[in-house]
Length: 339
Ligand code: FDP
Image 1 (cartoon, rainbow, N blue to C red):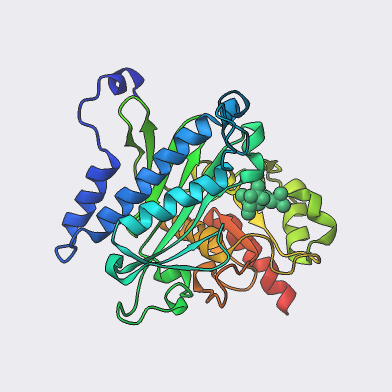
Image 2 (cartoon, rainbow, N blue to C red):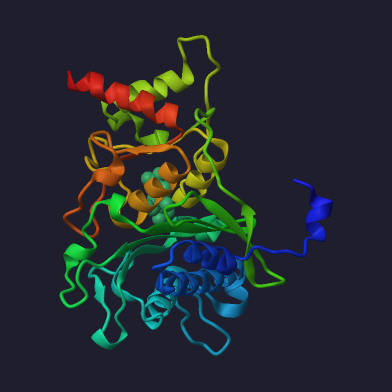
């Protein structure tokens, strides 16, 4: 990248401009998705600003601390959830919302209803907030089947039916990665402009990677294919170099690195958690959608992740996602176990 030229760039592709361009490619589009996405972007900017101040919590009273007026402040994940729910409802484009923070789905009141359902985790990786590690918001968007008859079935659809998905990572910079089903693009928040600018156009994940990412502390409970795959990463028998291990423990950050550098991220099933840990609707599906759109794959240990049909809104699933060839190796190991 030519940084000098970048500093003087005057033709900025903001996320709004990008989404409007996408909209104009589809003559039938009436701008509803564009409006919905702009409300999600607003939520992300709010959370980015709150996360930036989290380290000052004790000083200024944020995130579960008491502020100078002696008022108890909301925890960041609770605050983020409220912001997203309000932004999504007020967009007038949503119908059903599923949030990691809320046990029940939110059905938007009829007067404010639109044709989209949004499943989201407002602040994923929140156990990392207090030590300043990157965290993120993840979202997946579906179209409802019948506006007059909205039910939970509208969000219990296979991931392949999503119309858009993305995440926003609050890290050393704030990056929003989005797919509307036509490739994957990354936008970085320019704090001086308050705008997300296209910095990572048409992201493609390397076909094969040099990194594997997993919580190895669970190794004693892994199933055979997972154990064999990790063994292969460390002690390859084909003369290739061992892979490096990188595990942040914050899904957005681990998946972001996987998308950009290649390799594989796994949260497998184990004897203690037969369905793994990660949630289908707002972790597994959006990340799988992005991976496929970037040329990678995503597998549950049984099937293509996006083919899974969830039966409950907070359902979990094992997940293996990343570079096409790396995930292919995992699929072979599971197929061998079946025999
Ligand atoms: P967290 O518990 O910090 O909210 O599903 C949530 C998640 O983080 C993911 O972001 C992360 O990938 C995973 O859990 C980490 O789980 P382990 O601590 O079990 O490795």
